[in-house]
Structure formats: structure tokens, C-alpha cells
Image 1 (cartoon, helix red, strand yellow):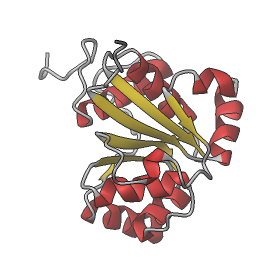
Image 2 (cartoon, one colour):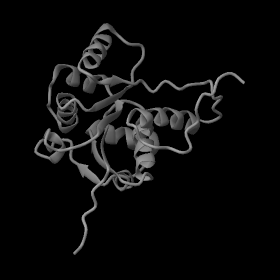
Image 3 (cartoon, one colour):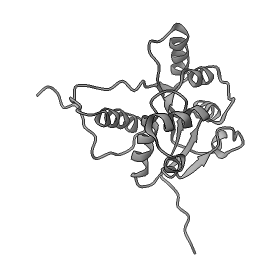
Length: 195
């Protein structure tokens, strides 16, 4: 009798229309390399534009990194329901528009509906918000999501490791996200105190 693969972890990854598509793609690459992790991907229309503009990657190449891919308007998909068991969701990057929709509970597309479900089920939601400088609406929306249990995680690079490339900065940030998802990673560079 054939066995069905049952992942030990299910992670939803969303890429919205903010600059920084590299964070979502790199997160998918890192998750793709982990055993027993199943990824569910949803990308906004503007997110796909940024993948093309910033990374020059074909859509099919990004979709191939995920186990399941959903159209952003598919509100009837599995990840739109609280009965879909998952271990967390990351919006990488998270636009200010997406942040506002999550803060106000506006489930107007699959990204914001899946985020709403993640919050209501008390699961881990990480928003890699991308904008600067921040206005008061941005700050209030971040506070609102934090009060609901979400984690605001701007992809601000840590420089104490003296990164030499953009890739090293992105990897360090993605490693921190993987830590928040309680996922193993053998190659994470960690602070061990002053030399």
C-alpha cells in the first residue's frame, strides 16, 4: 500500500508587492532544502512584478520552489481556512498595503485571508515589512498586528557579522526568520559575543 507524505511542518509563504522579493525567494530556497517541510506559496500581482524586476526570475522557477502554489484571488483554497493545519506564515516582503489589510482584518485576497486565519488560529505570523521612512499609519498598523500576536520583522540587516555581499545579508535575515519558525538550520551564523 503506498504511503502518503505527511510533513512535520507546513509553512505558508506569501510575496507581496513591496521591494525585496529576494527575501521571499530566498526563504523558499531555504525551506525547499529542509526535510519534512511543506511550503504553500501565494504571490500578489505586484509581487510577481517585483520578482521579475528585481530578480529577473521566471515565474515557473519560483513556483517550482514550493510544494503547493495558489492564485492570489483563490479565496476558496485550503490556506483560506482555519481547518488547514499549518505551523506558520511569512509575508516576505510585506507591503504597507498588505500590512494595513492584515491590521484591519480585510481578507480581500488570499494573502490577507491566510494571514487573518493564521492570527485567528493563534499561529505564528511574520511580516517582513518593507518601507522607509515610516509614517504614523504604518506604525499604528504594525502595533495593531503586534497586539494581535503577529511578528513585525523588517528585513534590516545585522552588520555585526561583517557581511561582504548582499547575499550574506539576505541569508542572515532569512536565518532569523527560520529561527522564529523553529526550523533547524546547520549553517546559521550566530553571535557568540565580542571577539
